[in-house]
Amino acid sequence: MQIYRNSEIRILVVDDARKNIQVIGHLLRGQGFKVSVAQNGEQALEIAKMSKPDLVLLDIIMPEIDGIETCRRMKANPEMKDIPIIFLSALSESADKVKGLKAGAVDYVTKPIDSEELLARLRLHLTMKILQHDLESQVKIRTQELSLANAALKKREEDYKSVMTAVPDPIVVYDLKRSPLYINPAFTRVFGWEWKDLNWILFWKANTSGPLRPFPPPFKRAIWEAFIPRGIPKQERSWTSVSRLRSLRTPRERLPGQ
Image (cartoon, rainbow, N blue to C red; front, side, top):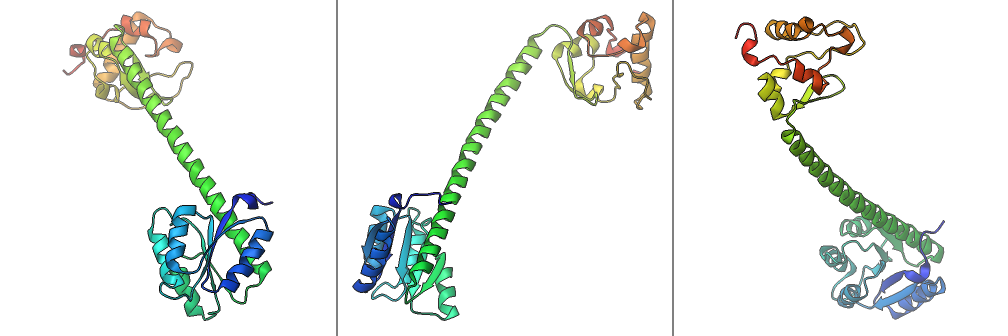
């Protein structure tokens, strides 16, 4: 399935032989393509800069600036570097083909031109160019969307922290593994513990009776004393409740051994 319309495609044909230009131009126009022509490298560079062709058919052997040098200059120009170039030449040696490809060409068609081969290669490289352009556009769009999403997320995090900082109640935020991620200033003010202290504390899992993970004995005794004397049921032993936190105030200075 063709992903472009021939009538929307402009092809630049560059050849010093007028007859070759006429034959190739007639073939391409018969397929509905728009055609621009040039008979030397200088003309090709000027026309390519003005008309922005979608593809260039470029003869290698030309007077003054040959096709290899013309190709190099096109690829060195930011406005033309993405235009696919197919070389047309009677040269059939592998070394000549490699030289042309190293200059920036995408393909090589040997003269005398076979119309079916030329059209097949032309369609292939036009399709590849359009798909590449679409992919780059999609990547650019997704990158912009991701940048906006990251900016929005950062703003939300800043707003969230601002709210947490302003709340007078102690609050702990932790992940699914019960590792503390954030505590607000009120928590430190009430309990005397900072975030680094909570990294040593095990948060009991509600409604489970799994083994406790090890943590320093001073914290273990302090937490145990905070929960047990008040008769809190095992299934309610959780530090996620702000109301419970407020009722379980255990100042840092009460920690055994400190």
